[in-house]
Image (tube, rainbow, N blue to C red; front, side, top):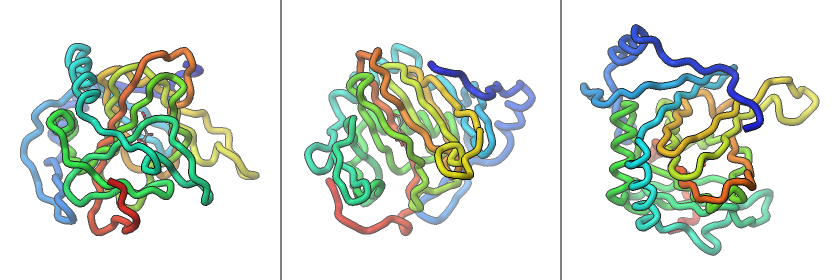
Length: 256
Ligand SMILES: O=C(O)CCC(=O)C(=O)O
């Protein structure tokens, strides 16, 4: 890794207790929020913070379980191919340098970079991982975007997950399985332009079986990317669980 993190901190035992008892878990279905009593599986979190960035990181699955889940996903997940595996940038079409798939509740669709991706029905393994994330975080999710990187040449460029159909009250929960990869946050004001500011990037290493929570307002101010790492020879699967607000979805060409 080029450089390590700005700040990371584990919650103290007292904070952990306060945090657990802080608030009843909110469970949102469409636009209505109901309250859920139970918080069944708390895990120890590391906090990453910077100006406008708020993330929590933890190991969700041990190696044995992470290996098993990786292998099951390799069997189950059906990735987009052909035109469905392309994005539009300034009117031009590009193949994405990785494979992508979307799963979720019936009728959901996620639109980014000029593509509209329709959710396939949850598979048993995806339900299992989604439920483990819910138990650990107290948040419920109705959609997952899956990115598969065959080796360190596959990557994802800088972007923000700030689409208006995403519920900002719900973090984006990113589960990583397979090869360890660097993950970099860059503040929007540190990118280009005359008013460019000197703000250090935040760099993490996402481990096999890990869970990263990108809490509000991280995706408002910070871009993130998974850069090329030519030394990485093995595959990685990343799952970003999201909550889409149904009546905020864009309509458009559906890609199944
Ligand atoms: O593979 C990753 O860790 C990043 C995926 C990502 O940036 C995204 O789904 O928006």
